[in-house]
Amino acid sequence: MIPGRESTDVAVIICAYTEDRWALLERAITSVQEQDPGPAEVIVVVDHNRRLHDRVVERLDDVLVLQNRFAQGLAGARNTGVAAARAEVVAFLDDDARAEKGWLRGHAHQYSDRSVVGVGGAVHPEWQQAPPPWFPDEFAWVVGCTHSGVTPEVQQIRNPIGANMSFRRRQVQAVGGFREGLGRVGTVPLGCEETELAIRIAQAEPTSRIVYQPAARVLHHVPSQRASWTYFRRRCWAEGISKAHVSQLAGSRDGLSEERGYVSKTLPAGIRRSVRDATEQRDHRQLARAGAIVAGLAVTTGGYLTGRVGHPLRGAESVAGAIA
Image (cartoon, rainbow, N blue to C red; front, side):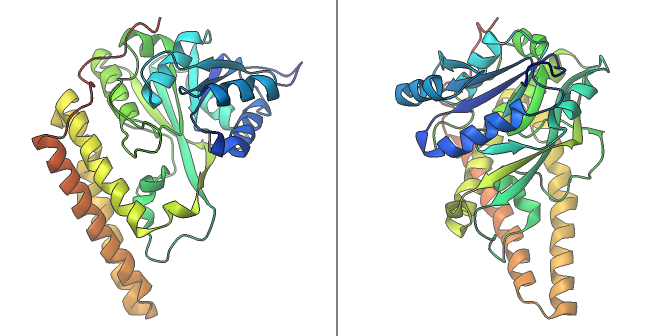
């Protein structure tokens, strides 16, 4: 935050685990510090990497730097940040994302409504190289971004995307925080810890709301190695397993509430559009996109079924807890 600038009652938490993203981490922090109004504080949580922790302490100013004091992984790192924060709202930005102008204002504005307990912003891909021609926008979540089926308007949602989200700190603490055992550990592409937390908050407070605010935009760096069929397939499989875990913990009704509409409406519409464009424009790349949609759904479904019949939850049955 720039001295003398108006600030919000929002603590921004950025979790990091590798020095390989140093330049991106610096960019993420700068993008937060330049927000107007600014954050109450910026907290960088380093996930069990002493060298990275020391480097952040030595080279970056005006940030609180912490070591993850829970089990290794994004869930534990986020809980460490929540426990240290003192603001009413905690916002999360990925270390490889950049907040655009008005990002923090977009989040903070929604909390003037006391029924709002969480906010998710728009996440747009920033490709290191052009995306492959077969990549469908309906599967932008594969690279941690907002997919094309999400309408660009303020609306109630089940859960935000982890790269760009915020919650009232009290509600996060009241339900025990993010579940360890769910979500990413290093480069393992599991996820959905934010989905499970949002569902748990909603179940604890049925009248509360989580909203999508498209004006709170971030750009999410997508490295070249993620613009491949191998990564696409691997990420779809991991997402299926993660969704199975969430369904086991939260129940299928809540755990798959948004996925039903996505599978029944968004994906069929994407296939129809791709086939139509292939026919009208004589562009066979559109058929490849349609094929990728079908394949992505099949792989994700396979991961889900595998997760339901025996993929271990890695200790996610218990909440991290003790984050007050």
